[in-house]
Length: 143
Length: 148
Image (cartoon, rainbow over all chains, first blue to last red; front, side):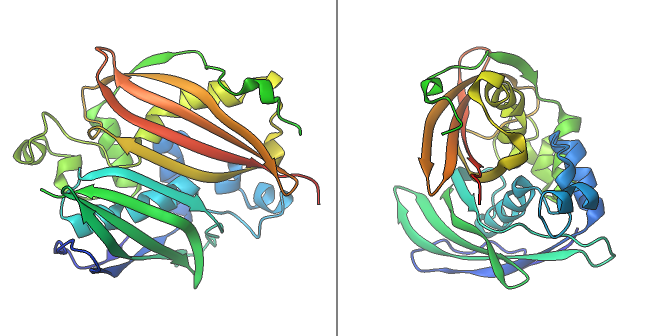
């Protein structure tokens, strides 16, 4: 998938706004992620199964959405290994239609504070204008 | 509630070693669209001080999945998978997982509770190297939806 984002690291200081990054998710991405993660739950690839359990259709793995938001965090930090803690609550599923456009996930955030060289980030993660993650927080060690 | 509360504190069977491969890290990074060279090129990882390519931040959940599955799929626990929704996920890291790591996982049922007609099951998987170095801890909370 593609991300539109600033590739420059942001200065992680208290109050810093973290510029939004947009990720596109297609059905093909979910197939690849199922293979890579070992999560073959059919709600992530079968409309028949997804609708049978009451979902609108195939949804992205929650962990896939968490991984995308993690990409935003490491991008803002400018360091792929800087995360020391990362947690989310899954609030709404990301429904991924079976077409060429797929779904969009938008990740933004703010630096809540910096303590002993570790920045606390609070993330806002939406898809289709709705929050898909809540309590999404990451702590990032600053070099 | 449907879940057996005596399972709190129950340990799952220890698993491992999970041998972390460079190609698996590259596959996972590609699947999530993470193109940082540290996830695929050992020279780039070395510039950041890592002995080999490092895995993206959610990779510990992949490593811990077999141990977590063995714990929660115990039929005596009573989880009805048709009602399960992934609620929360949290990871704490001592360091990034990297290619060459030989990892073992110790899983525990941390909490079982009931609220609003739903059951909540929290598990913890502690991931360390075979040599005993702590690497990451993964907490997962599943919601087992109640009726209505």
